[in-house]
Each structure stands twice: as C-alpha cells, then as structure tokens.
Length: 172
Image (cartoon, rainbow, N blue to C red; front, side, top):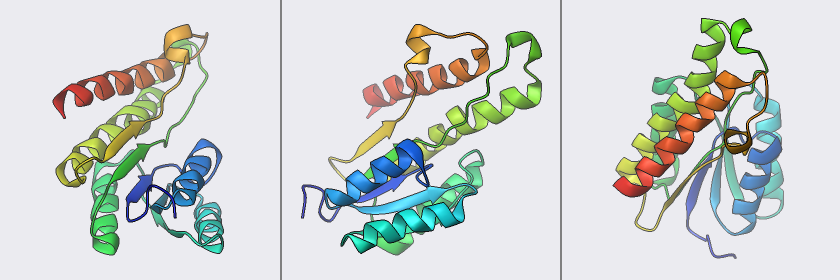
C-alpha cells in the first residue's frame, strides 16, 4: 500500500472531474476515501466501486455541501463509519458565467453557499477532529489571479475560499 495507508479522506464533489481524480489518487496511495456527492448518486457509486475494484476502500456519501447541517452530517457519518478523519479536500463547487449587472441575488447566494460557506464549515468541522499531521485542501481557480469576464460573483466566492485557506493555515 501507499503512503496514505490507514488514513481517511473526504473528497467533496468527487463524483466526476477533478474530485473523482483526487479520490482515485488518494485511494491509489492507500487512503480510505469518502466520495461525497450532491446529486450524482450513480456516478459517485461508480467512483467508489472503481476504487474498491482496484483493492481500495471507498464509500459514497450524499451531502449538499451548500447546506451546513448536511456538511456536519457528512463529518459525523465519516467518523461513525471510519472513526477518524485525516484529509479533507473541499472540491465541490459551482460556476455561473454572468455579467455583474445580470447576476441575481439567488445566483450570488447559490455560489457563495457552495463555493465559500460550505467549505468554511467543512473546515470548521474537520479542524475539530482531524488527526495530527492531517490536511485540509481547498480547490479554487487560477481565475482569482488572472480574472476573466462575466464571472465576478464566481471569482468573489473562490477569492473568499482562498482567504479562508490563508487564515486557517495561520490558525492551525
């Protein structure tokens, strides 16, 4: 097994894309992986099954990462099933391309809830229980440094996540 044997990792938004690749790599390196998903149950179960078919350990757990009670439930369920948490990868996110003048309050609230609020409270819950030497990783975008048009609220939500990351690094 790899260097992460006996470690437990949660990867949010792990049913496809970057999250899936992260979950598969953590499992390849020996970690037990919680494959979190919001709506894509079949895809998440396929990711977990693929990990197990290669000799790893994984379970798919649904939790809407924009809802704080569900974030907390994901953490409790992980601890109930595996007794520990060593790695949290905050990957779940959403992108909406809209000009500032076209962005609604609902757009703003949805993006900030999933891209900033959910990860913040996931970090809070993880910080309470994460094992010594554990890791919290937040996935953002290079767009916060380069900028691109018609994505102001998205970039703001990811910028907030980056600032939470800097603050947490100093705090912990």
